[in-house]
Image (cartoon, rainbow, N blue to C red; front, side):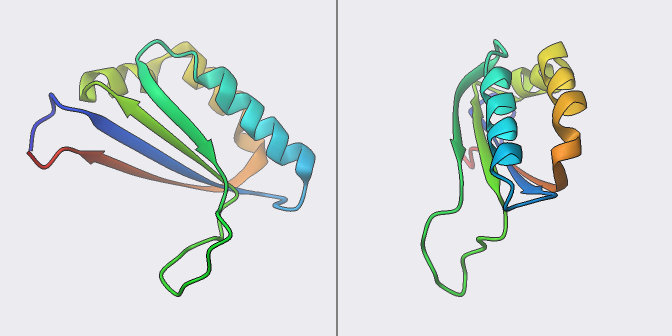
Length: 106
């Protein structure tokens, strides 16, 4: 596996108040603002689909999928002032965050 290919960063957020529409909208607004980080190649903000099978986890509130050109761009994003401001401004909204990072298997 190489650190030079596409790097995918997928973040799942569980809101403190999952039924609070204002909290949902504030998190989504924060993520949209966060999308201005220059090293993000593309992004997608989602919520659980209305699918129901035993293997599907629908317990999260919002997902944030990011594509970076490489790991170095991801690492730069982690230290970017826009990312750090997002965490500071929005962390009160969530009770749990899970991240899945993936790279090309070659």
